[in-house]
Length: 92
Image 1 (cartoon, helix red, strand yellow):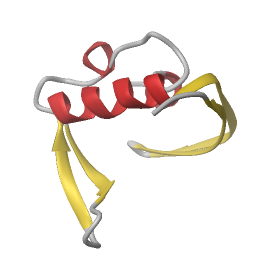
Image 2 (cartoon, helix red, strand yellow):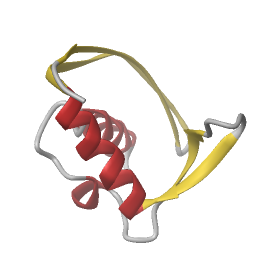
Image 3 (spheres, one colour):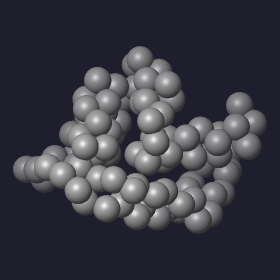
Image 4 (spheres, rainbow, N blue to C red):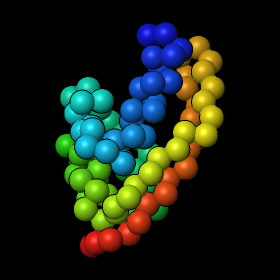
């Protein structure tokens, strides 16, 4: 994957919060998120099905969700993205 493709994937994964893009259109079926906070402290691991529910809940709770990519850097196969979310809380 080229650096531009890697940056595009990062943008798409952030964009799913503000659009109808679905996680299964971005991530592989074996996707595991290793950064979801755990209410008891620490981090829990969430698979694709759990991640789909988190995104859906977010869409239910917030409207006018805007995502801005402020800056991206690529080194080897790692992409760092600085972003800003601007939602309006409307439910839940």
